[in-house]
Length: 328
Ligand code: ATP
Image (cartoon, rainbow, N blue to C red; front, side, top):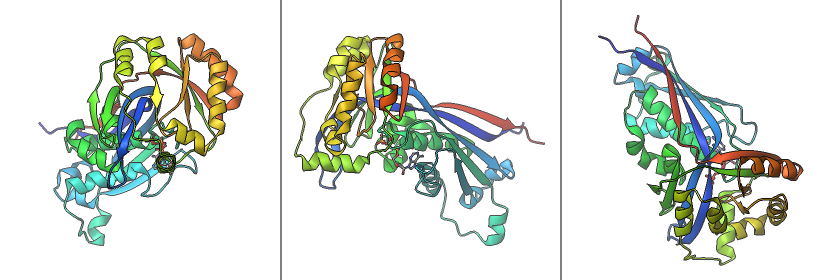
């Protein structure tokens, strides 16, 4: 019996918060070594990948090398439309991995299969919530399935790490301890849910600029360990977690954007158990005792941020849905 062909894959992928981030030092190549605990939150982007033309063309060995890619998104001007978009970077990376370089003639290209990618952007941009990394991970998973490559999340990891430090984490989601440059991840067991208020600034902060400020301030290397955060996550103890949340990059983010210190104070005044800058910022996340309290805090700080949302963590990992076409 002939197999049905996958024509559309949709991947819903969550954002993350860093519960703990310690900078261990700078390597000779300029990359920073980290120890960080990441957890997904239920704020999602969605990547849809569609194969156009004849899906059966994918069974031809030359098809992949002739693949044409396009991208549409609803993320506004802050999200690139071209090959700088991490969705297209991931797609090109996977194509390169899967096939020989293209020496196709224009006539062949006419008949080549086409993959249309579309991105529904809900994760705030340049907010330290790994939005672009999540999109890259979603794209790798979607195209791995759509193109029938069958690599799976484990085999996609090296490619994910080449695209960005948070991308390997985003392939699996959940809760993880990441070391090295952030690409070596180990799954962490967690119990229960945590409720957060996320305060997004109107203007993003560049991650490299925050690391540069960290180096300029001569703040590292840091020796603090994530043990208590891991214990809090394993036991679902919100008070223990509130006391243990830690981010070495917070001082650097505040040095670049002093108003962030006031935004943290706003969260405390509104009733947060603890408020920290998320990752490289400028997003501020506040841990609330429960969901009801999180909604009240969000209401109180609504006018202090460009966008405020209430989220729950952990939010699992990417979710894949597909549409197939039966052969005629
Ligand atoms: P991280 O938390 O991993 O440091 P971030 O959440 O701070 O990342 P992103 O939202 O990934 O930051 O965006 C950083 C920059 O990447 C943006 O300013 C934008 O120019 C570029 N970019 C490329 N692809 C995307 C994408 N798919 N979504 C958002 N930004 C993208």
